[in-house]
Length: 248
Image (cartoon, rainbow, N blue to C red; front, side, top):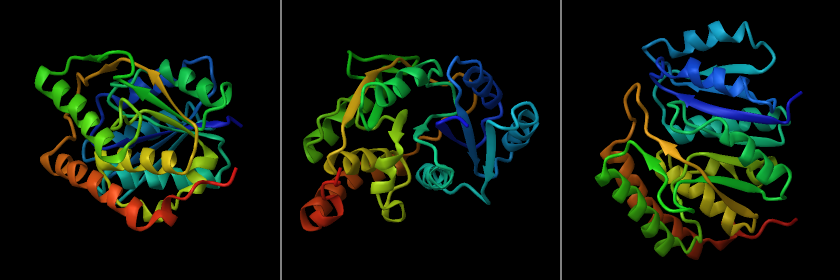
């Protein structure tokens, strides 16, 4: 059995899902993949089911009844992975913005170099973003600065969604208490892992904007992130027990 599971949430990713799965399964490292689909009306789940016959021991599908949000999809996947004893658990987008070849680098950062959380970072080595309009690049870059100022986290890419966790990180976080579902979810998970004293490493990646399908970014997700950061910091001050250092 593979020791690493990649969780890919999907909603209307018909144009991308087969391509990304084929690329993952062509890697020299043996990865398992769990697709968590939120009842995509475009038939994304059906395409995954077709591929499962060719990868019966390494490709899995969980379907949910509706569009319930990115964060809850990952929480669903984390619980599924922990119940099946995977040691390394990944977050990855379905839209090919994350290069599957970087999975091995993130894996090695945790499995070989001893880090507990590896973050695929767009900003640790300059600004490595392709095909985004300048306005969105600036918004994302300054959003990370805003998060760092409010929370005190030392990471350059605080909203990154391409990550590898050691299972002990997810076991130490009360997943039922994770509040946010959009980009604030990504910030909350990093903040909690960092406050608990886990070893975190940013790994430089190149992020390429999707060429197929539609972005899931919305004003509501952006507002959640802006206010969520303040709430996270406040909770860490009034309820420090929630973020107490993990006993290693």
